[in-house]
Image (cartoon, rainbow, N blue to C red; front, side):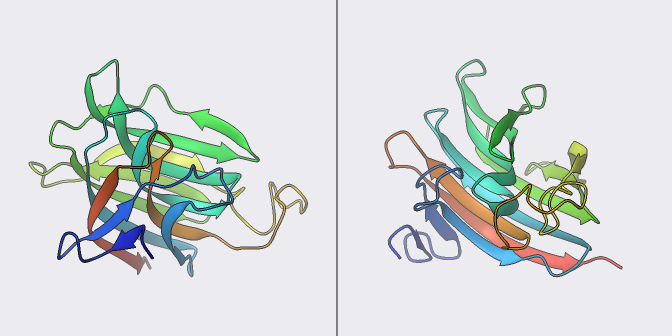
Length: 188
């Protein structure tokens, strides 16, 4: 696969940005199936975007119209890399504009804690010992084979919930992100 490798930066997984997560063709994501109702997963990502259409991060994925994505991107108003959250719910794009964290080192650790349909997203910069809350209690119940509120038919398909890391470059397809690690563990 030309869009992902461990050769260009040994000790890291490099993912070259591809199409939007809304695209059914060539989204650049690496994913693992969620196998528990209560778990956490985390990663450390380094990314140097120069355009707002370049992103890299992690999230929860059901299909191209239903996902939650905590990501690094370039902010023109901040003039630097920031952490943001984007959500797709039944094809609708939802931006959490009030949640923006500047990342002067272009690097952050991210963690998602998933608990029976709800997710907390935390972050930690290189100087931090403790995790900081980015967004709490995001309703992710729609990311299921049962659809929204248990009603089938809201989501077209049957894929199950995935955890993912990935990179998007809808600008010039020349950006990449380096992921230091990726872990998933069940919580009792």
